[in-house]
Image (tube, rainbow, N blue to C red; front, side):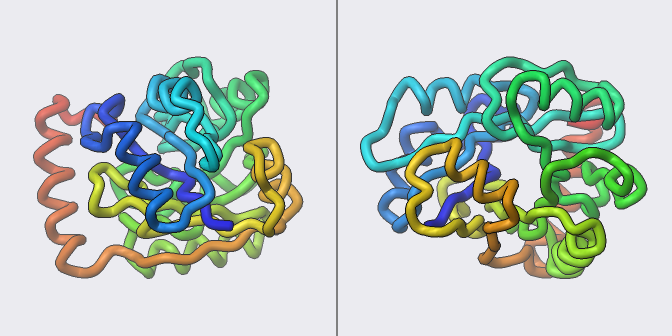
Length: 220
């Protein structure tokens, strides 16, 4: 069963996906479900839950900006304060019943870096992010292996065209959000999809620098 576990919608400052489009497009591609993980906002996940799409599993979430990089909070519907330390962010995610995943740990602009992942109580590591290059993703695979952590993958999509470009696979029978989370926690997940190409990397760097300057040189 395929799940795209890292998606942004119009509830993210840089997202263009509408929630209904996410569901419709991924369902047409054979996906069993998805996690909506907007930047520091649970609203996309809440809307998806309210839509209650038949035959499509919604996992609400947030991509939380800690003081050291981005952390995916899955199975969370309440806001989590941004700008906290990595430990405090993970604790807040766990307190709300969610799981904490180290998002694209080797990304220059928003990754945690291995120094902020090692020794922290993360539940899993995102090892396939379709907006990260293959070198970063390969290093994330090695990090998860060293730490003996479960793995996840996602498109990190911000627009319709990239939905499903990266994803997590779990065994058949994971027909509810809690079963998907359980499969991940038990190490029964795998990943597949594409990494960012050199051409896309150049476009991404240009866009990221422009957005960074526009935000007053602050992280998203």
